Image 1: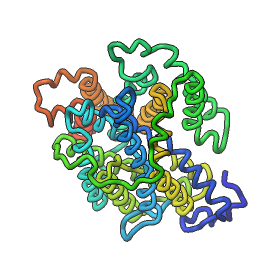
Image 2 (image 1 turned 30 degrees about the vertical axis):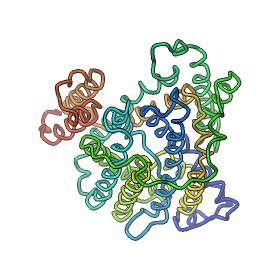
Image 3 (image 1 turned 135 degrees about the vertical axis):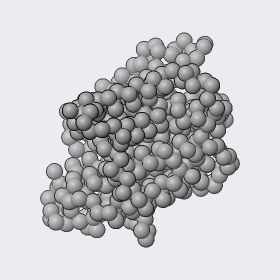
Image 4 (image 1 turned 120 degrees about the horizontal axis):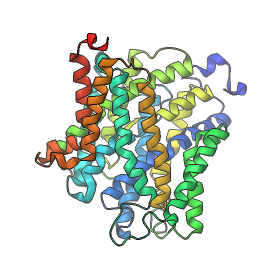
Length: 450
């Protein structure tokens, strides 16, 4: 419930209203706390998959630190695009931007072992995916008919299922390798379980800031346990600079059709998610439907934020659903409150020491957090599917799409004879599942549902 000292109910529903700074600053920081762990985690996972993270040579850690920096910096910049607006760009609503887990099933295979595209190819894909996302703003409202809850819920569920393996691997100590006997030991699982237990306790038995930032606080608790177990090293923090500007095309420009197509596909999914978030913001915070101008502006801001991030080594940006819930909880619709949080992110993104401190989080502590976060992605998909009329027709569509998509995730060797581009697009399972669900939903007769 909103604090009555913030303003009248009419003022709180006005995106242009700004509370007093003594109240606006804590509210802005609260938005950052709600999204911080989810925003920087993809950068850590992608850097680790590319060989620049856990267990790699300490000389490689600047790459991970830089990617964490860019996650914070461009989440802040994209949030400013979204909240303050720039011409037709931006919904001018209290929408917080950040890196979505939805892109990980495409990004991790793209850089794993540097054998497919590497960071140069990935960033080029992000750039073109952002440009494609930007142009989706021109007609996103006209194609929503093809994306009912059956399709969107299935896609979100598939994204979560593609990620849960990563969460368990990290909680157990990273990728299981020969000569790594600690993998799966209680020394690894102990701090991870602390993260999970503290997160659940805060989420269900507290209110306000503690509940909103439950995952972040849980990770801090697991981090403290890991520290006292001697599992945290600050060796790289002292070597990190106090200030650094982003570098355009830091890893070069490398064309890879599979990554570009994959990023464009995920941009489409992200655009649909943003439409839902904009609607959730206006309904939960202002009690009204979102306008076409707000939805179009939000999609433009998503695309621009992603394209600019890709140029400088950042990851794709999209609206953060947890912050939509936070607006509903606080009742404060002020976009300037969100802008204050965005400025905080921008400042942190220009200070490499912040990224260096984040990079000291042990693999298994991060794993405890992502088990919760990736599980929530699955739960979000199931929640969307709860709106489906589960007649015979829809069950057939769901069954075939899920079986093919999940099956290809589990047995990628089934596609060993495909060429590189098509194989990358198919083995994640997301593209075939989505295409099947969309096509079947359009061509199967409604009579099948009887």
